[in-house]
Image (cartoon, rainbow, N blue to C red):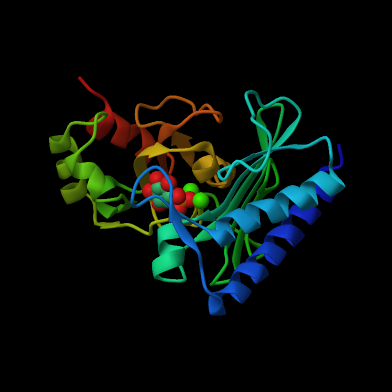
Length: 263
Ligand code: IPD
Ligand code: CA
Ligand code: CA
């Protein structure tokens, strides 16, 4: 398998897709809802996923695509090469803010993550990782992550999890939020994971994501020595929805033991 070639095409296509999204800002957007009133999808989400489908299908017809908008075939295993794609992660931000959203692509071979790509379209920041080859932001290598204590941690968390969730007692999350230095919420899981990889956030916890939300980000964080598991420390199954906890090494174990594990 020529991974250099796949990598070059993937980077080229993600930039081209970003350019198309930027060009769409002046045009009228069609916004629809999916599972609930806050689950938005636009014509650009669909058009972007179709763009990748056409490019990949033409260049690499044997590759398969697991995309949020369902443009590829139904994927029930990760045999061969599978591209896991979120054409626009952070659609609410895309619609309301025209920023703070990203294209997210993880490329896997027989279930092993090889390439992670997250493109912050508006800021023109491309986060990229290659298994065993490091992680980069616009070609600049991201340093390995070092541990920090909980009290100096910037934690990415969506406030809505503190009230209603089935996984972690709310009292523990309230304590976590008051023990860390500060909390942030970007509204794009892919960007939040890219920020953990870049050391801008020290940790990110979220209780329910789909494979296209976390696939690329997980690869980026792991490539700089960070840890990504579910909130109880279990490995992630790339075909399933999951809670996700990504953080610097050391901090990961401490936070799971102190704040997430049920006694
Ligand atoms: C969403 C974003 C958001 C996360 C949601 C995702 P979408 O993805 O990543 O940050 O909290 O769970 O569904 O719908 O904008 O692609
Ligand atoms: Ca998403
Ligand atoms: Ca999406």
